[in-house]
Amino acid sequence: MKSITSIILVMIFTVFGVVNVSAQSAESIWLAASTTAYKTQETVTVTVNASSSTPIQGFTFQIRYDPACLRPVNASSTIPGMNALPLPQLSGMVDGSYASTTPQMVNGVLAEVRFTTLGGCNTNLSLESAALAIRNEAGFAAPLAGVTLGARNIALTVDKTVGNAQAVEPGPGSILPLTPPPARRGLPGWAIGLAAVLLVVGILFGGFILFRTGLGAVPKTSTSSQPVMLHMKRGPEAGKSFMLKQLPVSIGRDPRNEICLNDPHISIHHAKIFTANNDYYLMDLTGNTFINGQAIRNSSVPLKPGDVVRLGKSALFVFGS
Image (cartoon, rainbow, N blue to C red; front, top):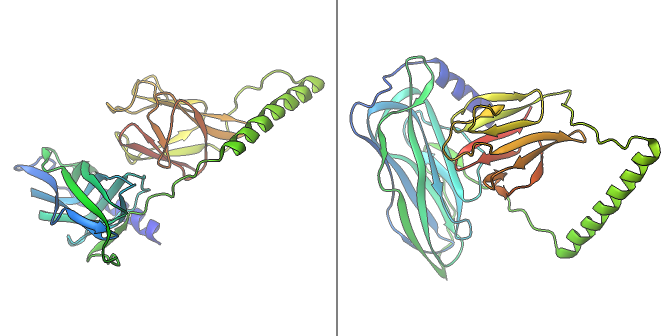
């Protein structure tokens, strides 16, 4: 039900209403907190604030945090008509997005973001990026020009003493859940060694079978009979979907790539998607590629429908049909 509501909101946001794209005066977004000293298991509440003389129809923000020190819980916006648009969350980065069907004036708190402290530490919350959204003359969502980021960092001190554990009550307004994906547990050394032995045996056995049947030639990579899609959620092509008709597909900043993403944080040749044995794989070419919040460095990993891939700092797509 939530996903259907989000799709409807985005469709409405794309069709109705036009406002001026240019900022009328100084526009700014900043991060704030009422206090910076906490105990373990207490709730940290910070606010994303904005000042704008131009009515807005949405906003986005990204807050970087230390997952060993803080656990994000939820965010809420009290601006009338602002509805949360849930996105897949990455460990270490809160990703908030809200939209409204009608223009709203803002001069103060855009959203309250809540974390739970996990133990004694000194840490920072950093406003990685933020934007105010309006509608351009063509009727499409666009970032408001001339917006500056004010206070971006908040230093927090968390005492290892356990405080009064609080039930994190959702604030008023539209609630955005911020639960990160579960951490992947590494395999023990003996399991990795056993897997390596089985892999070698499998390769030798497969080569023997191919030799006996006269199919020793390495098969060419083929395209899938049912093409899949890359749905861009953030970055220079946000909102656009790419159909993978023929593979392999190269992704990068160079226009010669099949998928060109004009982002300074994306390499000229950043990653590649290919098929092997009727499965899809993502190959990292730069050491700055993430799948479901986990880094893959100069290697290939299987891709499954629903996987969330981040390239560079913020370009993000969902792999699926």
